[in-house]
Image (cartoon, rainbow, N blue to C red; front, side):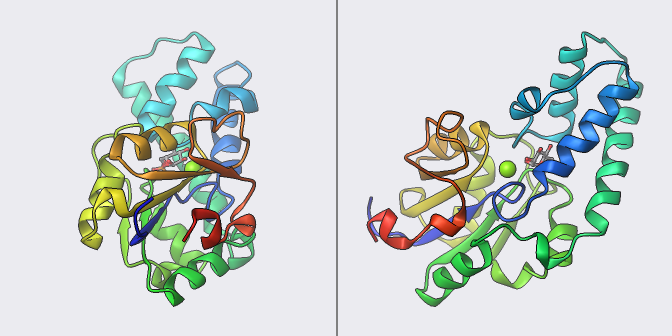
Length: 215
Ligand code: G6P
Ligand code: MG
C-alpha cells in the first residue's frame, strides 16, 4: 500500500475484550425470551448496531415483536451490558493493543477509533485510553451501520487523510467489509476463516508490527 498516514481501530474485540459482554447480554435476553443463542449466532452481531443486532437475534428465535417491545428489549440488553462495562479496568485492554497504539504515536501515524458503539466513551474512559486517539468516531456520530463505510470515512475525514492512506483493524466480518467499502487496507484480528476478506489476519494486536504492513 501507499504510505500509511493513519490507523483506524474498531473497539469491541480489538482494543478491549467487550465482545464477551455483548454476547453475555444478548444471550441473557434470548434466554429470557425462551430460546438459545450460541457463539456462532453471535458472530453475525459483531460490529452491527444495537437495533440491527436485536433484529438478527429475534430472527434466530423466530420472534416477531412490535416497535415498542423492540425498544424495551434493546434497553434491557444495554442495561446489562452497561453493568458489565461499568466495572472495567485497564486490565481488560487486549494484549498488545496499548503498546501498538504507542508505537503508532511514536512513529507519527494518526489514530482514530471507528466503533458502532454508543458506549465507546464510557469504555475508553474506564480503561484510560481516551488520550491515545486523535479522533473518536462512535455510534453517537454515525447513522449507517457497518458494512457501510461511514464510520471509517468519517474517521479519515476528521484526521484529514485519504482512505487509501488508512489501515483498519477489525474483529468483525461486517467491519472488514466496511473497511473494503471505504477503500482502506484491512487487518483482521481473530480467526482467519471468519475474517477471510481481510488483507491480512493476525490473532491479536500483540502479533502486529508496522513491518507486517510493509511499512
Ligand atoms: C460494536 C459491537 C457490536 C455492538 C455495537 C453497538 O460494533 O461490535 O456488538 O452491537 O458496537 O454497541 P452499543 O454499545 O451501542 O450497543
Ligand atoms: Mg468489534
